[in-house]
Length: 213
Image (cartoon, one colour):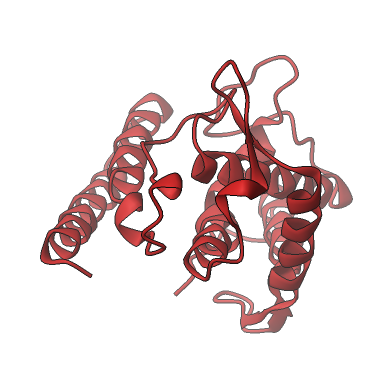
């Protein structure tokens, strides 16, 4: 990686560490949301340095959605939609309403609690897989359709390929940092939903968020 890329990643790491420290003293949800926005800016601000394909078609110009404006954003948005569905299903399976969140504001039609749970899993499941598919050249520029209006989406054939990669990624195993049990990545959302339900019902003093190392 070029020196400029290393410096950008190191700067982002310092900024994210500072944001994490400040969350410990945040007096309310509104400030936490502001800190989350600052962290997201730092995180996605250096995301392009993690892309190593060298193809200008896969330059990441910052997070965009509705519609995604480049191929990397199109892939991220597709994975986030899949992850959101998994998180909603996990919460419902443990008796929780995915519409009622803690950190994401409640809005009609928005699964705010599922979005809360997604924040713990996006980097390890979605972002890491997106980077792998691009850096290993498993996706080509022609696997995406650039609409006349500027939006970008996966072709039908590429969508099927990406779904297979998603299911394979979910079968990868890890040791859950709180439970100490080995499980597939695809079950982590269910484990976290169960832990949240136990906390809300008074069985756990606190909710142990998922921190992947």
